[in-house]
Amino acid sequence: MKPSFFDALEHRPTAEREAALLAALPLQIANAQQNSRAMAAVLSGVDATQVNSRAALARLPVTRKHALLERQQAARAVGGSGDVFGGFSSLRFGAHMPRIFASPGTIYEPEGTRKDYWRMARAMFAAGFRPGQLIHNCFSYHFVPAGSMMETGAHALGCTVFAGGTGQTEQQVQAMAELAPAGYIGTPSFLKIIVEKAADMQVALPSLQRALVSGEAFPPSLRDWLAERGIAGYQCYATADLGLIAYETEARQGLVLDEGVLLEIVRPGTGDPVPEGEVGEVVVTTLNPDYPLIRFGTGDLSAILPGICPSGRSNTRIKGWMGRADQTTKIRGMFVHPGQIADIAKRFPEVLKARLVVSGEMANDAMTLQVETAGQPSDLLARIAEAIRDVTKLRGGVECVTPGSLPNDGLVIQDARSYK
Image (spheres, one colour):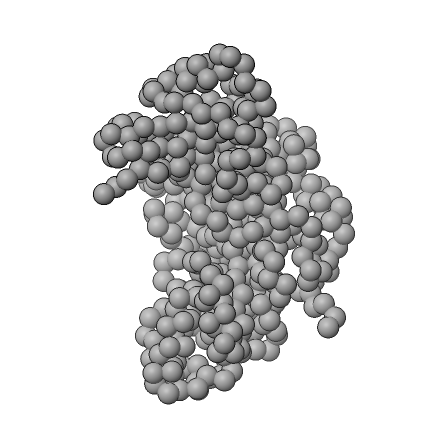
């Protein structure tokens, strides 16, 4: 079967894509400095024209969600400015910002007027949706942007949307039976509930042949369960801050990056890119001029896969969501952060990788820093132990392990305590 693509961007040569992204990067940096008060502060002193490589991008600060929330809260506390976005949005209230949404925190996100603002049409096409079809959208239209993210993408693809939203399972089944949509968009767990309810009601849903799911884990067991009932389910990875980040294809070998983002995988707690294949935090720079987030730390863990997708899409692939990067742990009344472990490791050129293991029982815990080392001078363990006390204000043991022996799971702090 001849490969089918949403547009020519998906199968352009890798070098061509990289050149286009790096050509757009200085322009987005300049836009952020000129039109986003918060990003101007973060990027103070940066020469936008010089941020034209991955290495230059990696030297910029990472802005994480907690910082975005703190700036928004500070701006709202002042009041009267209309800047509920903490200076991150380049848009203001009015015709260019038709909607505002809210995520837990509360973090507010603007929606602009550009077609397919959240860039979801590409993921829908990869999931098998085509122009002229009806899509049953079961993402929420209330507060959060998920419903609108999918609806605007469907409209850009040329589809009609039934705004199902969440809940009301029997009514969802009835609407699907009567409207015969080509497929479903929503969380995978709610799709399972709908299919089970339809079976209980003895209502057939023969048109329901495809689904694009997101918002939660989509394990192979559930994917297979849906397939047994004639539904081909595909997943995508998106956030309310960034829109689409990556999407699944018929190859089902990882998630292909969207064409409108630059993605890095960094060591949790730092802004340092990790080698290809190593698990770390997903950091994204979006080319969205309305909400120009530069090196935005998602807090999610993933890893880059080698090679290109068998579907013919030439963009980078990631493994998908692999957990959370924020591993801050309370030990003997003190918070220890992944960034502190990275700080300790950076002090010693012999240390290739470090992982703090917290063991024992709560209130009677112990911590051991496991380090992969290229060499082991006689006083190395003592010097690392001293650095642990200096950085964390806690005493901890040190254990040297063979290079490559620490798990590739993105964990910098492993909480192995007993909570019984």
